[in-house]
Length: 469
Ligand code: GLU
Image (cartoon, rainbow, N blue to C red):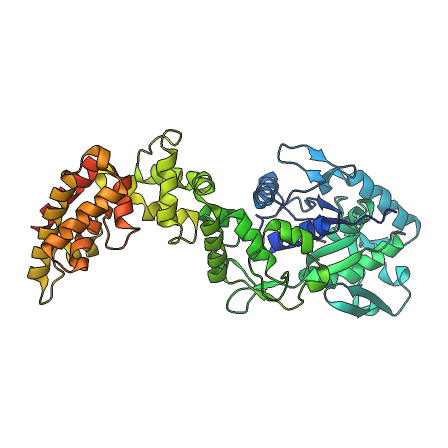
């Protein structure tokens, strides 16, 4: 047998890839990369009722999106790579049948009642009183053999039960380390008995503690999105997802929280994996994602943002300017928004005023408070100030020609208007902000004006003036 490190991620396609599964995949991938080994993907689809090809596709898509390139296994185009396939369990029936015969010949299985199913005889296969193994995360584990009941390994329809298929496959794919969720810790004694009965070398085991929600219960849909695809849809970056999920049980040292996939691939060690359950902290994930957005730069941002922007444009009926002709225009938005969003999907709503043309939606609260004086004792004076400000701004901006429609002349013209009016800055700038951006909270105003069409800005100020009256 080869001594090469070979690990596998073995999802059952009975659902989507959830974040817990993704973390298991990440650790397997990182362990293989850190040790110059191979990372395999095997689809455990023997549960015919609950497995679907669509789930398999979604799992492959999610893994590929996370950038967890697998060396062997099924590929997205429907083929597979590697010498130990097929990598879908439903295509490996012959091997299971051959290995099952070995157990049958050794007298280690017996029929289940009158059915065509078969049970494995644990006591016959394992005369010793205890079953023991050293888990690389949980340490030495001892189980009384008599706590392990004989278990079915072959269904009456001839298909193998999980315990049997997983052992046959791991051995025949030369898996050196089985790294998986701790929901399989209690399955391991059964599997060890099978390994020995089949004459296989027993691999190393490393079980990963579960991921909890913020209420201390196992992470589930009750806690929000759990599928990798949902996080993708919300605009999390794959690099941030990998970084954050890796942190749920591992860290490169005591203090670093942000690290690239390459660092993980270089430094990952199983003996640094914690056996304490990790808590999924959506706020921290947001923070990590925000850090990646801040670091990515304008060009990468536009590429990554584009599908989310198209989706928003479809929903809002926006006509997006041609991205190849207006690349710089889109890139300039990055600086306006990169500190204000946790996810890519949050960018379009914050930048809606760039895309809504003549149909800018006005936030009602902002209109009341800023353009109409907001009630209260100073309402009439504030509304009058808003009107003065907007009129002065309109005149100042109208005086600029198209050639001067850049940040510096715009800022100078507006500063000049403010000085002449001698208004409190807030009473000067907020009406303009509401007029141009539709909201009293927005990305930087002058920079936004410089990126907007001159005539459109003047039209919006005119419209705001009508709202003041
Ligand atoms: N197919 C199993 C699951 O999805 C994993 C089996 C294993 O890793 O041993 O839970």
